[in-house]
Length: 152
Image 1 (cartoon, helix red, strand yellow):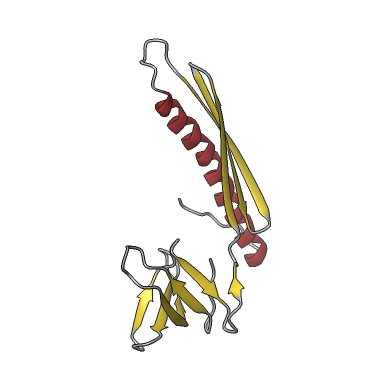
Image 2: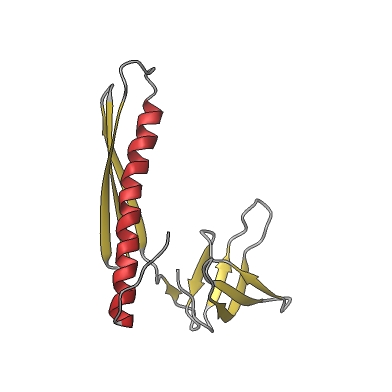
């Protein structure tokens, strides 16, 4: 989710009884830990710095809802008593990444399907994670015109 100066953020109350807050983005603070937004809240004119999260949405300065991130994650699993396979598909903006993971139960281990599911999904997401790092490096290299090394 990417905001621009002048956009409005709407933060839904994370707990029952907390009201929705709306504020204007005054500044985008870029940092190693991710972007932070300096926001002036409507009503009390209080300013604070926030990190974008799942309970926040962005409206363009003219009131139109903006979805600049377009992130979608789908995971499908197939399993039997001894195996589990997972396919993770991540769509980020207009690009799609997919990974595959498999877990096999050792015959001496107890039957615990959740363990196989967790391992298979973790392995599929790990593969997608590596693809995303490579894509980020490729994007940077195309802009900078030189090789880059991303440390993850």
